[in-house]
Image (tube, rainbow, N blue to C red):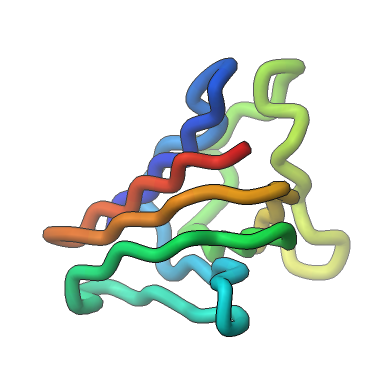
Length: 97
């Protein structure tokens, strides 16, 4: 599935991923490939992204809020204050604040 994380300043992340775990209002939830369409409000917390590989990812000042996990280099984390998530047709868009 394809994930795009957008903030008011820029696109923070845009790539194919294996799964996404997001902080929803009623707790964390995970999205996998071919998940049913969903729209959800996100609360303060951490988005965890499971990638295929990091070889194609760029970590620069613009993407400074994306942190590779210390033990598993295929897991990335992004800390958000709030946001909105939409998944449809294997594409996840997160509008994060």
